[in-house]
Length: 178
Ligand SMILES: [Zn+2]
Image (cartoon, rainbow, N blue to C red; front, side):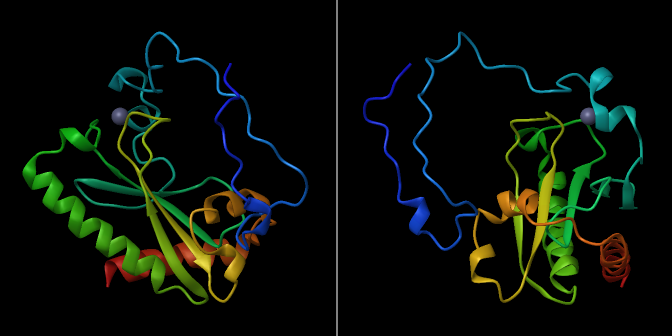
């Protein structure tokens, strides 16, 4: 375990930090022998590939747009998946060009919701193998909710009321189909 050299950024002074109270960096464990496999590396045990259009709010022959099964703190969070079982680096040139258009299209749709200040478009790719982009619409006019901690605030804020959540998804689909 390593503690030497670890730094504690002054997060308690950051307007966007969601928590109060004393913190210290967690000790850094030594590297493991090899990277852990991600969930669903093989299409036969990939949740997305095995569940077809489940949770899809919109789809076409190439893409699926899904929502989380339950509302969370941010008023609209949707995920974009290619239907094909690929990670980002495996897209063909044609798929990559189509992805660029889809990212803009979905960002525009979520941005069009009332009360949304910004849409964070995120791909981490360390959890599940099957490529997916997060679109996180954060509320406008809350300076604390700007930036990357919006993803943490999503789990801190009380869940969005179901009717607001459902209406936002409906409006996203309507904007995509426009
Ligand atoms: Zn898959």
